[in-house]
Each structure stands twice: as C-alpha cells, then as structure tokens.
Length: 139
View 1 (cartoon, rainbow, N blue to C red):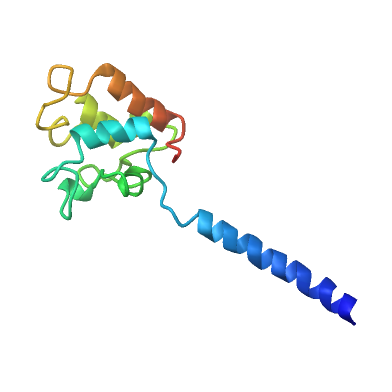
View 2 (cartoon, rainbow, N blue to C red; view 1 turned 90 degrees about the horizontal axis):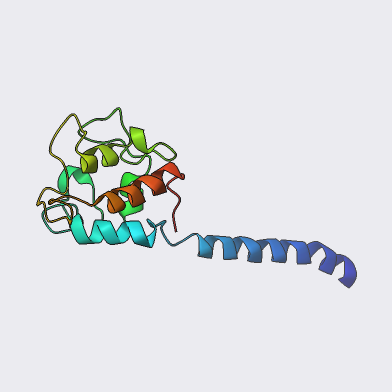
C-alpha cells in the first residue's frame, strides 16, 4: 500500500514543484536588451517624454516596461505599424521615428540631444534596428 501511494503521489509532487519553478522564473517582465535600453534611458525615457505616469503616445520606455510598450504594439500615430515589429525593422514605427522617415509627427529624440547632429548616431540606430531584425527578443 505504501509503495502504491508513493508511486501515485510522487509524480504529482514533482509536477507541482516543476510548475512552481516555472511560474517563479516567468514572474519577471521581459526587458529590452541592455545596450538598446541604455539608448532609450539616455535619450527617450525622460519625464515629459517617454517615461513617468503620462508618457507621450502612451509609450513608456523606462526599463521595467519598455518591452511591453513597444514589441508587437501598434503605434498610436500610425496604427498600421507596430512600434517594434519583430524580424522587420523596416516596418517598425520606432525605426521610422528615429531615422526621420515617419509620415506623422517629428523625428525623435525630439529634444535633439543625440550625438549625431542632435539625433541618435548611426551606430545607435543600427543597434535598435539589429535587435528588431533579429526578432526583438527580451533579455
């Protein structure tokens, strides 16, 4: 009887433990890779821009929420485009905005404090572009 009880209960206990570990690991939100987030933090995630309780266009680029606010999320200015369209930077509104090829609104960053003539450098844009083209994977 003890052996039968052990055989029936042990798999259930192991399954419960395994699922508990899975939930624990998945409780942290997905985040943008550190190199891309550093660009967002320096040039975009500022009070009055893309941070705080009322970010412009509802797009908060603060580290804890940037991924959820851009990946596979439709742009408010151009709803036919995703802000970051995984695997397709050319069809990502974020890229249009930082390259100045958008059809609505201004090129970003708006305060023009970037290193390359006031905007993001080619290297910074390419880092964001590469991340999106490679599937916009979280870290």
